[in-house]
Amino acid sequence: MQRHILVAATSIATSTLFLGACAKKEEPPPPPPVAEEAKPAAPKGADPAQFLTQPLTSEIFTADPSAHVFNGKIYVYPSHDFDSGIPSDDLGNQYAMKDYQVLSMDSIGGAVTVNPVALDIKDVPWAKEKMWAPDAAEKDGKYYLYFPVHDKQDVFRIGAAVGDSPVGPFKAQPEAIKNSFSMDPAVFKDDDGKYYMYFGGLWGGQLQHWKTGKHTPQDDSQPADDKPALFPKVARLDDSMVEFAEKPKDVKILDEKGKPLLSGDHDRRFFEASWMHKYKGNYYFSYSTGDTHFISYAMGKSPYGPFTYKGHILMPVLGWTNHHSIVEVNGKTYLFYHDTQLSNGVNHLRNVKQPIELTYNEDGTIQAVDAYLGDSIAAASDAKWVDPAPPAAPAEPAAPAAPAPAN
Image (cartoon, rainbow, N blue to C red):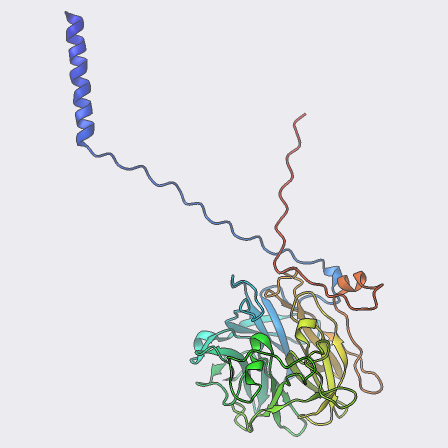
């Protein structure tokens, strides 16, 4: 009897607990923690022994160095690379730069200062994206920054910004320079005080859209291989330094027979990265050949040309792009350039290098420089240049070794 009473009591208690549990809604279990996406490993830099000179700075990624001497000090105006996460393509969409920071130093080989942002794309009212290779000039104590950027219609235009210091900040003009197009502005001051801007670039630089002198974006073609190559452009700046004094003209680059270089002559024809300097009365127009990765040059007797092709100044470097400037410092001529040493070949993460002193021959021609020693060693027995073909992205880090078994 007592056993039945105990069982009944137990059943009643169990039922009461069950009904109570049913009456109270259970709280759902907390969600599992969200695993953070693994950050990509930082690119491992290439062996410094493979390079003739080392990066000017490792604080930021920099490229396309335009070097000048203002008031006895050296200023370098580079592009500011960053990892945009955009896949690489032939139009350079991975080069999504959005501001500029000036590098400065008191002497060649001296300490380098990375100055604060000099101009941001958000402060350029007409700009949309892609702040590519800039340049700068000085006149009457004012400093001028020139920059290419896509406008709101995705057309490359060249802008001007003005400041009171070589390192900025610079205030952009409300509109792009009239009659400007394409990219890579380089400003040259001649001995008579006149300033000239050289510019242009193929593929993503859109120079091919202006073959007829009008903007024709539907025609992205290059001239046939047996036709003259597209020429870079030049225009003299007016007294304001923020507009052209004339419509842009062709910069004609001729071969040794006085004929224009042909479109199919990829080792010599112009692609991008115009630069002008002067030495002993000769004008030197230098530029990148783009898909063959040389810095080449031609000589002339006028800032307008024509210019006769003379050879290469800089052999291909690690990375796809090759871009430079040439400046005189204390009576010596130096070549500034970039490569991808710090990112070990990631083409949109570049670094400006310590400059190299150039040597002129008696006839005024320039002795070529090979700054990528790693490739030179590999190609030493081959008379033809071997393209280093760097990787498009850093290699995956090696998996850690398995632990040794316990004894």
